[in-house]
Image (cartoon, rainbow, N blue to C red; front, side, top):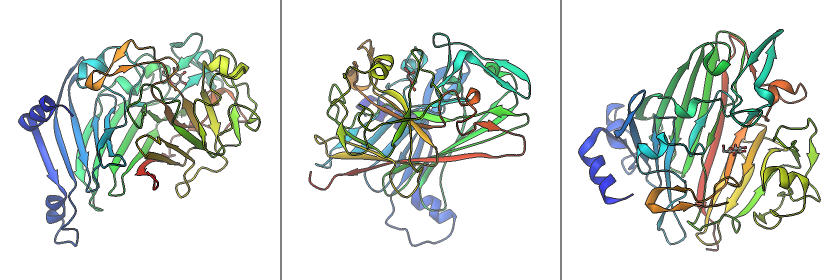
Length: 387
Ligand code: BGC
């Protein structure tokens, strides 16, 4: 974080809660050594009003900065093998970067993560037309998706002594073409074990489709490309796509294809293979089908041998969009003056499969009144032992 931001934060701090304070309010506890904090400060003005940014810190040298504009994770700072802090998330220093066009850096994606073919779906005989904001298809919730709205934010230290930010957004019936009033809530928690936990919750008053995710772009060592990062995804199958990136309804085996990440493999190893699917995605931009979603065993892990940082993914979602920043082209400059070039970051967006509203064989994304949408994903960071 640059010096001006630190000064700015100090001057404009509206709220500062430490673990000790949170614990004291809750009565004496055994966690005196705990040293986590959550600091709220002003982040700037948006067309929909002022927004804030919360810094969540734990006692293991990790911090996460999140704004209530789009629920965007602005920074994820973790120690590398030399205990040096590394910001592993792409983003901008100020709100202006986020108000300008950018490819969803760090944002909450809703109502529907990834594509819906031709921007149409039908529920109980009624067709709903969404914006086709990605060629012929609908992408990431439309023109003004959950990534561009102002969420209501409340930071606290929770009962387990963890810094936590609760974001809420009420999406009105008809917003971006989707039916039903949707009450959405996203809870970000930083644990003492260097895990960023994201809980997505929602309820509706009419049948609608929901598929929430987070669109953080990761680079674990600040290198100009992530092709030397090493990745494992516990997925024997993926959903191949047509040339507009809509799944073709089949689940394809990854074996003997560039999509085989069952064992650790360099991301760059086969990214330029002669393969129709690689051509369609301009690299990896595909939904992988987990063999078993799990909050116990990591469903994917990515590591940088340069920094020694490994990120592990745990999720209740059936799939993940693995995207290698193929559309980044150096036209965006982010934090610290870094130019975000082609394949300079990767995304692992946990999700239900793209176009599920139109593909009856895929796990359903339909949410009915009276049901609770509830799904959790954890991004967990640590240093690999031999580094
Ligand atoms: C999509 C890509 C898209 C990127 C940024 C990913 O989830 O699959 O095709 O370019 O998001 O919008």
